[in-house]
Length: 253
Image (cartoon, rainbow, N blue to C red; front, side, top):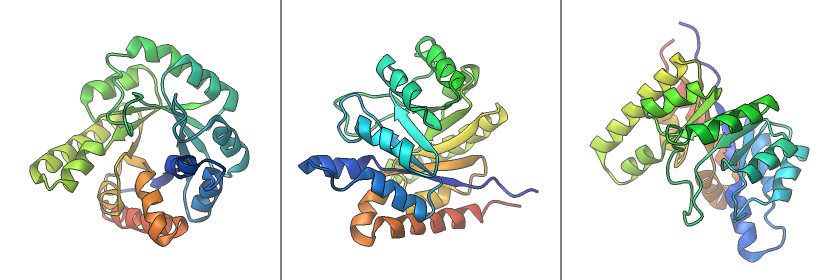
């Protein structure tokens, strides 16, 4: 059996901007954090430009695109404003996510089934501009099949329910959620989609999910920024890379 694909790590710098914005000014700088994460082993940088600009701002996105040496993944709502910004900025990738202004963070996956007609022209427009489109969805067969019909080359599986169940000691629920992720990743791969995963991941859960060979990228932010308070961002990224490598080593060869 051939080796599984390299498992990429995308580091989300949103919450470096959250800390900056709590006091105003320019410190800490999410672009500096992105460069540090790349030096420590990140394969790319993710940033979510929300409609209310609660953390990442327009200038952050422009600077990230101009200054970092690795791919930029722009998380964005499926709106005309965000599509225009993506077309102007031309990030490597754009991950379409659901967005509600009252939520603290992205609480669930995109409803690709219910929003097919809204998403179809956006996926086509971004793809036509050379931007790699990803849909942030639950590991639900119906959502995955619609993602394939929309010709989105990538999906990112929402891992939040699994991580929450583990954190709350809900063993049966966690097992069921992990099985959904595993089966969803296999289905997506069989449909020709590239599979990423993210939301709520820490060292332990990243190690566990790294053992799924169909998943080729993890996007992790809040946990790494939190860990950076104690050990520094570069050390947190290196520890995460080691955890992912341990998980990948468990894949049968």
